[in-house]
Image 1: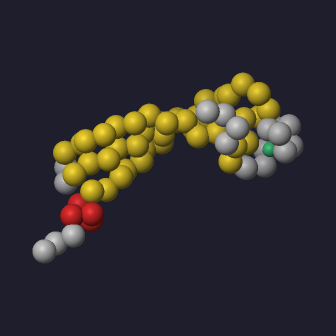
Image 2: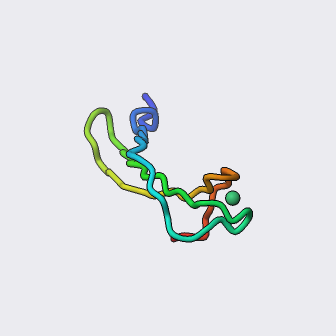
Length: 68
Ligand SMILES: [Zn+2]
């Protein structure tokens, strides 16, 4: 029996960057929101598409998790 977990692949596409309000708590730099489209599919059928934002600092490159 073939493990089906290998057929279920998450693909992520970076759609772009946006400037986010606020500043980095570590260095006070600009916070950048990276918009990522996360696509989970079974074979080539897309099952779940999510748009997520990831926040990070443009100056010190730390990933910021203080934003929901
Ligand atoms: Zn920073």
